Image (tube, rainbow, N blue to C red; front, side):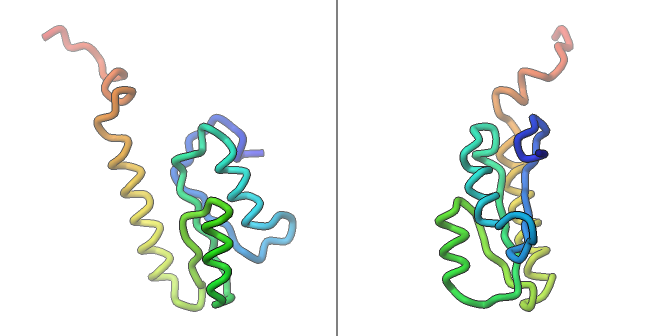
Length: 104
């Protein structure tokens, strides 16, 4: 399963109405994996009930977005989470340690 792989993912987006696996179960799985603690998890769906936002948060997700609110809202949220992921990875000790030594 790609979620358990060592490949870095900054963002996961799941549809609330998936057939094989519940988005909330996937959010819990992601949060249980140490190398996924900082990946953003967004659940999208068509239902407007506030409880889905609560379920998303309690499962470890970052946001529940309604498809009917328009894809511009989904795009804004995705852009925000990716920008946060990029800014949190810039200047980290692991990021600076991989820079080549220029000898100066």
